[in-house]
Length: 81
Ligand SMILES: [Zn+2]
Image (cartoon, rainbow, N blue to C red; front, side, top):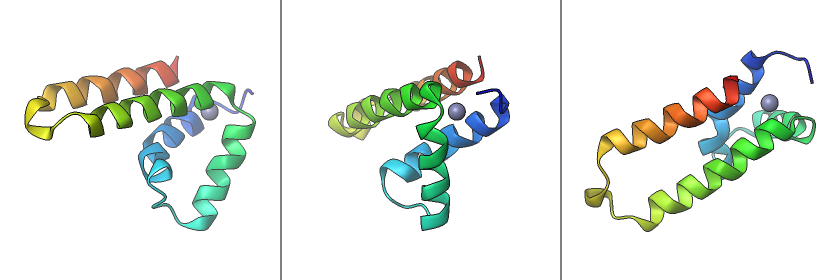
């Protein structure tokens, strides 16, 4: 708490890599440490998990690029507040 929104914005940017297990181990550990003390980012993670599984369940050709962008900016904005 109180460590600023910059860190949280950074976490949001890393969530995709985190969920796909593509982060370097030290970044992964750092992110997990932040998540353990930041309920807001855990909510973001769950939202992102839903979004990712939703995106994976939809065929790419059925998904307009604007929708991906809208979801991303919605999640980004939510974390900053
Ligand atoms: Zn956070």
